[in-house]
Length: 216
View 1: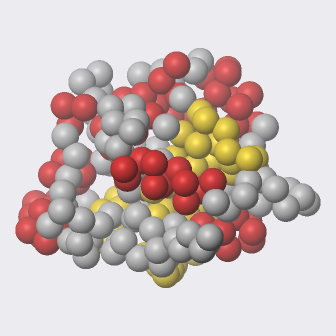
View 2: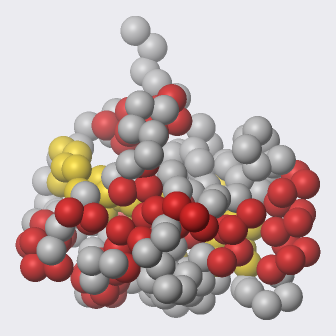
């Protein structure tokens, strides 16, 4: 599997895509999964994240799993060079995947070789269990969930924003997350300028510096 799990900043994204995509062309087709952002489509962080991906110059195709059948999602994923699962509400995203059966479809395509990029919520759901995100996001965002099992692409749960620099996730929240869930879950804490790179069985925390918009 080829996986990149971002905390916030996207600096590691361009080199990851250049190295792992199988397309011979320079302009890739990237599926952008929006379900974690359904409650706040015009929020500044949503617009900034999407803009950072668009500035890479690839074709970006919106993918909404909540309204897709497994068959339709499978067709969409088969036409992509990579999938990017955007940040937002972890539990809303997981609900969209699980209640439609699209969690299985997405995981199968990633295991078959489709490069997967997650950002924040998209990184958390790649693990076995999103319960440790309960202090950072509201589990009530996923009322249709019977449990909090993630995609299981890796055997650790990412805790993004671990440097405590974002106001919604101060150091106290990060520390409480570690204190409450660290004993029962395998956690990997990522600062906003870090990402977890997974290449088969190899896992490496890499730098992911803030994206720099081109000057006008």
